[in-house]
Each structure stands twice: as structure tokens, then as C-alpha cells.
Image 1: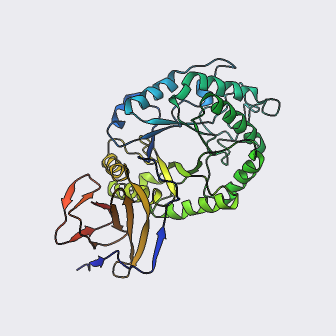
Image 2: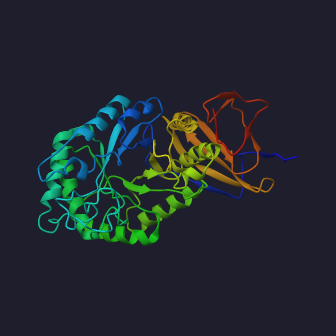
Length: 397
């Protein structure tokens, strides 16, 4: 018979605590990415999504300006902006993918995607005025105006499939683009090119920030944080590595967002494992210094796919936990009985609320609350002053 350990959150010792930065979270920190498939967009509605990231939505530079300098096709972008308007969410645009006509190496073998147009190579004029990219950014701002709220200044430049130029060349492009964006929309949010948790990839980014110093001011530090086969709790150490990098380069006071992330081995999980992962990953992400997170991806079956599954309900439920509440950090306690960690995360509005789970076995959580909610959205009554705790997080009212 399996033993049950009783947990209390008073005077717990031997715990590890994680806290947010001083800046409060946005009212709703839940962001999403979806691949471009307009016939599926109706499935996004009512799922607790507050922010939409445009990447893999056929809205990159090569998609909107692929026919030649000064020639634009805004159809896909307008479709995405209209969908964002329907959802009532704001938009994050991510720069990337140089069109073949502008590429300095249209046959670059490192650009390993379906475009085959040298889209990871820098523009051929980047060192002589950068007019190709500046022209695109100016046209984008003229067309979109304030319908785009935030800009991630390049997607994963430390990965050759997305950038094969130098850090200094990217710094030139980012500085040029930021100046144009701020002139057209002073309220726009400028996010760093995405940051990796891997130290060897951070070398590129450190060189980039050195080259960009004094030329551009960033509002948000953007990271891509994936686990590889779980568990969800790995995201804590990944975020900590990014925060350490921020401190090392003197940018620790810039708010942190997870602008892309989930798990890369998604298809190897059972549905129950996916559901537990969603709730645990997002709760830890938003209680460990990240003030917003964009899930990757709504309709990518192999990486974080939620569409048409109970995982979509879990995401919606977790969104309701965080909407209007600020994460105050998590406590971690080792359970000798279960040989597992028990987690307790605090969400704050006018009162404190707990999200609790254990990584193995079962336990109970003592509380004076009267109700708790499971990740399927069902609200339960607290019986006998305790809540059952499993690998699936529960929200205690």
C-alpha cells in the first residue's frame, strides 16, 4: 500500500525558493504561437491566450518581401493581425529570414529550411548602409502601425539555420530596425534577439551585445527555453542560466520573457504526461523570473501541440490561475516517503493562492481554503482541511 505524506507550508526547511523580479507581471502572461493555418484559427478562441507571437506564420521578411526590393505582399500578415484582433490579444513580431534577392549568399548551405534561398545569410548591403532591411522595416511599420505591440529583434541568431552572419552585422540591423520602430511607434516593446540557455551559444550573444552597446536600448530580455524529454522542472535551471547570463553582461535589470518554449520531445509523452507538463512548466516559468511566456506551439504536433487535445483545456485552466495574479515564487521540498519533490507555488491577488504538486507518488496539502481546481477545469470542495496532491498540479482558492 502506497504511503501518503502530509505537507504543510509553515516553517518548511530544506526548501529552495524562487522569486520574481521587482517588476510585476502583466495582468495576463499567457502567450501562444501557432503555425500558419487559417482553417484552424477558430480553435484558438476561448483558450486563455493573451498574446500572439508571429513566427512560423509565413510572415517573415522572406514571406512579405520575397518578390524583390520594394515589392510587398501583406496578405499573411493581415490574416494574422485580424486573427489577433478577433482574439483580443496583442502581437509579437519576430524578425528573421532574409529574402533571396537581398541575401549575401543565396546558396548558403547552413540555411537548412524549406526556403532554400540563403535566408540565414546577412543582407548583401548590411555593411554598406543596410538599406534592404531598413526598407522592409519601414514598410512594415507603415503597414502595421500600432497593430504590432512588440518586436523580437531576431530569431535564434546563435543557430546557423537562422543566422550565418557576424554578431556585429546583426547589431547593425537591430540598431537600424529599432530606430525605425521607435520613430513610428514610441510605445513599441523592443525585445533582444532570442537568448539560449546553452553557454556555447551565449558567446555569440555576448559579442552581439558588445557590438550593439550604445546603439540600441532593449525593453525586454527574450529567451527560448525548452526542455528535452522533460521533466518540466528542468525549466527552473534553464531560466537561472539565462538570468546568470544577464547579470554577467550587466543587463540583469531588464525584465525577462520566455518568448518561445515547451518540450522538444513532445511526441514521446503520453497525453497525461503532456497535461502534467503544461501545468508544471508554465507555473514554474512564471514563478521564476519570467514575466510572460509564449507556448510553442498550438498546432505543431511534435513540439508542444495542444490543438484538439485535453492539453488545450489544461492551458486554459492554467491561464485562469495566472490572469490578474502575480507569481510570488515556488518552494520545493524533498519527500523521503515518495522519493520525489513536492512543489508549492504562490500566486498573489488580494490574497495568496497556492499551486501544488508532487513529482512522484501522492501526498496531501493542508489548507483552510474551501475549494481547489484541477487542470481539467473542475472545481472541487476541500474535505477535512486537506487537498489530495499528485503529479498533476492543483490550484487552491
